[in-house]
Amino acid sequence: MAEKIPENLLKIIDMGETYTTEFKEASIDLPKSLFESICGMLNRNGGYIFLGVKDDKTIIGVNKDAITKIKKDFTNLCNNPQKISPTIYVGMQEYEYNDKIILVIYIPQSSTVHKTGGKIFDRNEDGDYEINNESLIESIYLRKQADYSENRIYPYATMEDLRIDVIERVKQMAIENYHLNGKGKHPWMNMTPEEILRSLQLYDKDYTTGKEGLTLAAILLFGKDSTILSIIPHHRTDALYRVHDVDRYDDRDIITTNLIESYDRLMAFIVKHLDDRFYLENDRRIDIRNVIGREICVNLLIHREFVEPFYARLIIEKESMKTENANKARMIGDILQVKNYSPKPKNPKIAMVFREIGLADELGSGMIKLLKYTKEYSGGIPKLIEGDIFRTEIPLNRQENNVTVNVTANVTANVTVKLNPTEQKILKILKENPNITQEQLSKKLKVTTMTIKRNTNKLKEKGLLERIGADKNGYWKINL
Image 1: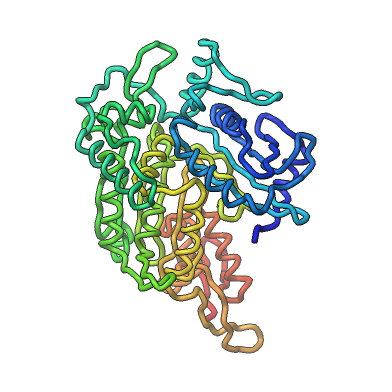
Image 2 (image 1 turned 60 degrees about the horizontal axis):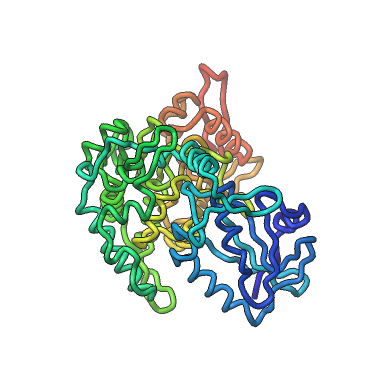
């Protein structure tokens, strides 16, 4: 049964058609002009397409008996390079409104220029229009190159600067992934490495100079280590295991290779240091450690702002697994706490390659998997913190964060108090060193002083902590 349409989508409908909103009637079949709108949105700013809504905002719905066929046809056409090139990975969501069914397609802004039926479309307030003027086509390419650093072109880089063996490996993985999912023959089947790069627009034209060359995405995905580091000297992912030696690390892998082999190294590090946990789903065992690992490793690699001089990191600690990478933020905060959050791809071309080989899913579905399987793995909830540095945190311990303590407040009783991991760490440190300052706590736990103040105040409110004396010469009293 379809879920009720959320308020934010109703508000979008109420605003009418815009650059980023399109209404189409679709009683029993896909509208003929659908992919012109999809192409236009991909080439412009993305947006929403509503099937079952008239131009005047009247919701008429889609024939319920035709929904299955419409969805199937849509998926097939999205994977058909004759219909949309490059092919796309977008979903069609089913919603209910007053006993009517609406189909909603969210189209992300793309980093590449798309064609449908061999034609380029763009959008304005009046809808979609074909672009056949050379200067207008150039302006679209220039806009894409400015918005996405993965599109930067290096005209002096050649095929000799790439790992052909990695391209061939990716080709074989894509063919096998197609076969496993019953999609038939992969378009890359009979392509050469050069043809694969061109089909993915990883070999493109710089419209500011007129020169053609490999893009940054091509070099990051398939480049020799020396090539990558000559272009991006700060390209590195640190994998750290920090459980016993918390001030440094117990194990480390410094990864400076291409993104395909970087994924292999990161996953091997996770498998080495995290235990697998038995889990059955529909009578089939699933390695949820690997599912979680795949999601955070892929996110770390494909949603990174590579031109920023910040080393990406994967950190496995006793209580959590964390990642950090440079980011071009759209918002600040935990995206899992934002209702109806619409993800935007950071490096769509890189993401496309990972999807082709079966390591990434449709945009947004990775968050759903991460939330589901983290709960199964540890009982906890992951955090995905958007900011200039994108951070993920996956709780690892099975126990619930409930600690039984003696709380002193006129009477003494055993009370179950819920403590977050930071509160638990603070109490442990204060028990060993009651004279430590908040600034020293901040450095020891590698969090901000504001985080320390917030958590110590919570502990005071729970009756577990008191500050005796002045800030400089006083000490902490734990009421346990």
